[in-house]
Image (cartoon, rainbow, N blue to C red; front, top):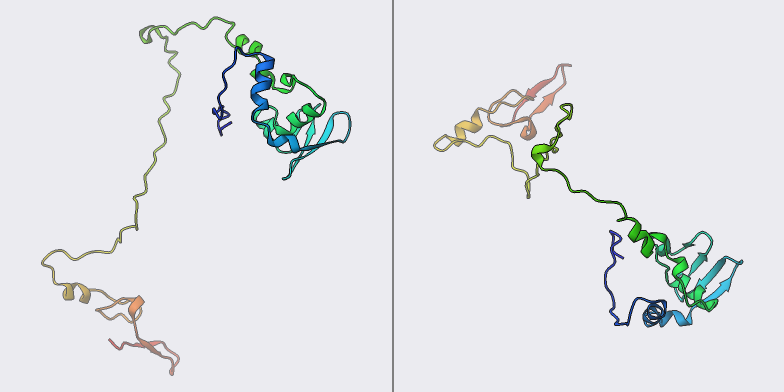
Length: 196
């Protein structure tokens, strides 16, 4: 089973038909490793299966196994098959979820499925709201571009730098982040002396 609960073909077998005997033969060819698993009864419906790894605790009444595969897929896991073999059960279809049964599949299509009329014959109730898709701004790959002003071609770069005014020492030619001014606090007032 994949993440969408779809069945992926792992093995193929050719049989005369989809009968219990043929399915038992087919599944019996992939469970060779499980022949060495040990089943220990806990109660009449609970069993512990030791499989040389984490193992599993099977509850036949609740149709659960601690490995979670039986609950997620609806198909008996290897631990359930080991319990079935412990009881010498040849038919394990009673442990498969009902939505895998042929009767459930047929009942899903018992009622008529009528095709839709042409779009020109559809009735518009008038109170439906048009829902637009969300606005998704795609982030560009790579490092974000700097928003700092780049001097135009022909513009004097030295003159461009000289127009910068420091907010710390109020001098031109640099900014607060590169300011090297020292403060004289001897008279109680803050005075800046810039080295640039």
